[in-house]
Image 1 (cartoon, rainbow, N blue to C red):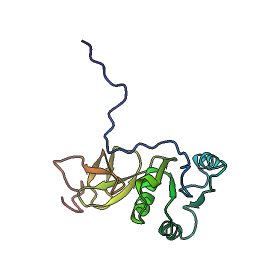
Image 2 (cartoon, one colour; image 1 turned 135 degrees about the vertical axis):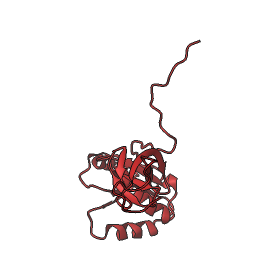
Image 3 (cartoon, one colour; image 1 turned 45 degrees about the vertical axis):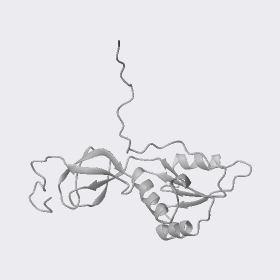
Image 4 (cartoon, rainbow, N blue to C red; image 1 turned 45 degrees about the horizontal axis):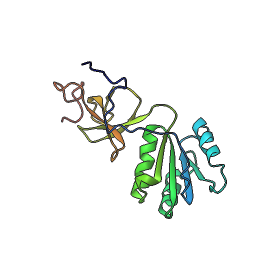
Length: 181
């Protein structure tokens, strides 16, 4: 009897998997929220809406004045049959996802499309702060200054990866200042 190993690396269940964007053909209204108006993926997605019977999506880009207020207004007024597409880096996706969820949109009404540089949020389990980070496996908390190991556990509620003290023998800032856990 031979044992075969999976070629795919281990990926925890909580880590999000993003798929190729496709327009939801049964949606009555489409809202496309993007982090960058120049993203290559944005052009590809908009081209996919060029089909008979598909309404043109309403596009909102981060650079617009009052972006968050306009987004909240669009989401608050969204009627049944609205589908939201969010395009950007992972930190942006989950920030907008949180706003959409708070306004009552369901998971099935939201598509997350990752594009651009790898930016993600990290939650410090020691001081409960959120911070943006790159793909590094180790970061220093911007609030309590504890060196955190970024775990491959993603919280959809927080929209962040968990950061825990990298050195359990020193669960505090290397400089001795900041919050003790």
